[in-house]
Each structure stands twice: as structure tokens, then as C-alpha cells.
Image 1 (spheres, rainbow over the protein chains, first blue to last red):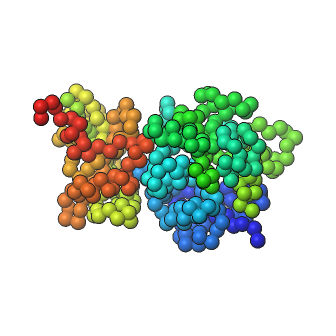
Image 2 (cartoon, rainbow over the protein chains, first blue to last red):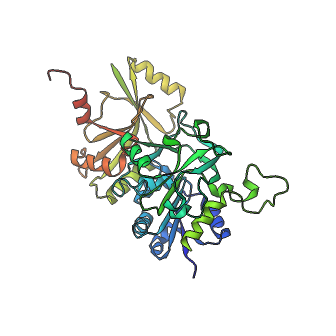
Image 3 (tube, chains in turn orange, green):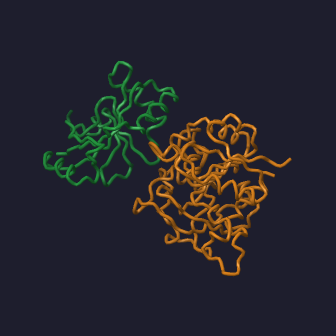
Length: 254
Length: 141
């Protein structure tokens, strides 16, 4: 029996369909689980928190969702070694829940994906994520090659990693910096960063390597029809580069 | 002298209601939550400033907002101002918490609300009346 993956849906989540679809296209058994069925979450083997505006981002992005009953199950699952993958708003929720970088107590955030800088505006931009850790450091990235480049779309107003200098040091020294923003050729510099993120961070992993939070959307570069650099010869419905991270996730849960 | 202008909703504030529900769920004994945005200005004429804000309708919509100049540019008791750690625009979100008797909550309750929900210390600073008075105490006081 294949592993069952839940894509929890909070009020205000809006990227659940394409996330679940790409998980299925990559061979996963993924289901949407709405907040009213939260109690069923314990029966799943892994969780993917998708993008959107959970609880309308009231108070702060992810602040209310981090205390939702859904997160009781996700936190318990994380503590038992289940794989948790958060994308965009899902990543913000994981930070608010204290699951990543995981350098403080649960539900006490030590970092945040804060308003973009220098301009605090919404950004929609095609980006590349470069894997900065040994692939095996995080179960979800284990099937990627070293220094893998994953294409994705940054679509957020609050994606800038922010933390105190001490916590940024812990993130860097503790191997929590999973992905940084890069150019298509793999070069990393400030021009590749769409939001002023500290450490050029695009994604964080917890200490145990089973919780990954990334801000850009690889599922929006999951098929050739939404890949920026596709050629006219490409099969528009074939998987594109963003699917690689999802395939690695599926391999890890299977 | 600093001037604080408060802009709040006169229609139901869903965010304040969500905060109330979440705080209760987190064990914070609070009966009512009010929220407003506070804009801080230096050396401004209160009447002229309010007239301009009202006329511009950039941060103020007369159909849904009320505007007031605060008596002092610091939080009231039972109130916290949440502001970005880097706050060049000098804007804060003010949360006022009341107990079942309609009085401002005591400091331990407010601190619990700040720690459990209202403030992410990675990006926010929470300014309460105590903190404000301590940080602005003049020498010799």
C-alpha cells in the first residue's frame, strides 16, 4: 500500500489543487483534507501545506493557522518523523509553528518570512532555488543531485527571511539553510533574490531533516505549460523542472 | 512632540474577532479585543493633520473607518502596540484587550497574549505602557 499524503486546507488556502495534482502526477497518493476533517489527519503518512492566505493572514501570515487544530496533527506527525513540506503560506505557517528552523520551542517562532524588502510589495517572478545542503540532510531533498536547481515561481509579499542575528547564525551554522535563490546557471548573488531575504534564503529545513519550508512555488513550474523557458517542441503537459522536488518527496514517503 | 493618530474600523473588525477567538483558545482570559492602526508623527498640528488624512482618503475611508488623535503618543493600559523591529514609517498595530468587566486586562494577561499570539519577536517589537514609560524615563526620575 502506498503512503498517503494529506494536503491540509485551511480557510483561505488557494494552491491546494495544483499541489495535490502534481503530487499525484509524481506517483503520490495525495488527498485534500479540509479543516472540518482535521481529525482524520492522524491517519496520513505525510503532509504538504500549500500556498494561499490561511485565515486571511489575519494578525500575521500563518499566525492563526499555526494554532489551528490541523497543526496539532502536523506537529505531532513531525515529532514522530513524518515528512512535512510547506510551500509559501504553508512555509510561513511552519515558521510560525516553530517547526522550522526548529531552533526554539514549538509554537514560538524564532524566525519569520517577513514583508519583502526593500519595497514591501507583492512579487511575482520566476526564480531558481539552489540546494545548499547535502541532499541526504533532508529526506525530502534526498533524491535530488547535489546543488540541484529547482525552477519555481516566487509569488508573495512576505517571503523575506528575518530573524535576530543569533538565530540567523544558528540557521547558517546548523545546516538549516536548505535552498537559496539562484540564477538559471546556478550563480548566487543578490540580484537573484526577489525579496531581500536574509542569507538569500528560499527554504529552511529543521534539525531532524523531515520538515522543509520553501517560499517559491515549484508546483507552478510543475508542467511545461507553466515553465517559462519551454520550447515550442515541448509536450506542454509533460512535467517540468519544479516536479523534481515533488518526485524526491514522493520517493522519500514511499 | 509626537502625535499619534489612530485609525480603526467602525464596521465589525473580523481580524479583532479572530484574535479574540484564538486568544481564548490559547488560554488567555480576554472578553473583548479592539484593534487600530496607529500612525506617529513629529511636530504636527493635530487639527491640520487629521483634516489632511481625512481628505486624502489614503489610510482613511469615511465609510468604514473612524479617526482620532490619541491623548498621548503611547499605549494605554491593557494595550500593546505591535510595530516592526525596523519601523521607518512609524506605524503600529494597537491591540486593546478587555476583561469580562469591561476593564483593560492586567499586565500578565496582556503579556500572555503578546507572547502566545500577537507578536513574533523575530520581526516585531511589542510596546506596552510599562515598556514605554521605562524606555522614555528621563534621567533623575
